[in-house]
Amino acid sequence: MNPDLPCCPVLELRQYTLHPGQRDVLIELFEREFVETQEAVGMHLVGQFRDRDRPDRFVWIRGFADMPSRAKALQAFYGGPVWQAHREAANATMIDSDNVLLLRPVSADAAFAPATEARAPVGAANGPASRIVATICHFDAPVDDAFKRFFDVEIAPTLRPMARLETEHAENTFPRLPVRTGEHVFVWFERSDDDDARFAAIEPVLRKRLESAPERIVLEPTARSLLR
Image (cartoon, rainbow, N blue to C red; front, side, top):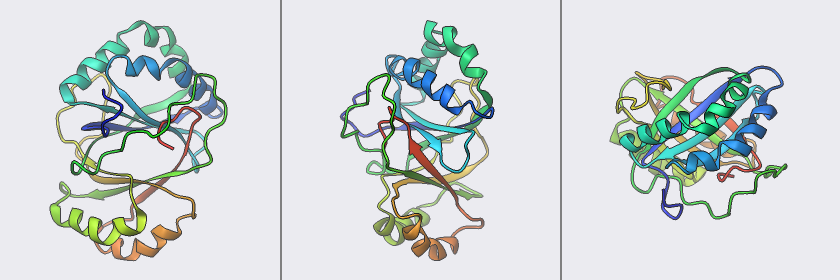
């Protein structure tokens, strides 16, 4: 995938629940073995994160050009030598890896922008001080244009989201890796350095449009995360 173009028409937001004390073990393995090797077969790793409020949660995002190429890339990686060599070590850290939302940008200008900095080299130890917040809003039906217009007019000017995504309802082209189905979500990502002060300012008007409180996930980028 072209790193100079916005990413990506298809994305996975993956949240892994790990055994206690295993998050840094997985991150070290992941950033040493699974970054360049996934990108070499056609994926784009948008970012890897520690969940600030859940010490046993590892979160990452990867993107694809489309659903058919997603199937080919996943088959190439998970059927390839690197995953075969390290899968037992990776899987040993995990309790659950099926918490996966399949997403797409809500519009052409809502995708993640190209990274402005090169990825840190293998072995980099310290992540940036920045925080990324993912907010997930759940709906009973696909997100309609009225909510998207509301978000763009009433919410986006305050929060300045870097990406706005919604559920990709296409059939999972690689069923070996499950994704959450039967859900309708609107997800946005923002940089946050004010402990939710900006979100608190808009939450009352947002809640009027939702049947349940949005889920907020505070993400701390790892050393090699492009999204930071």
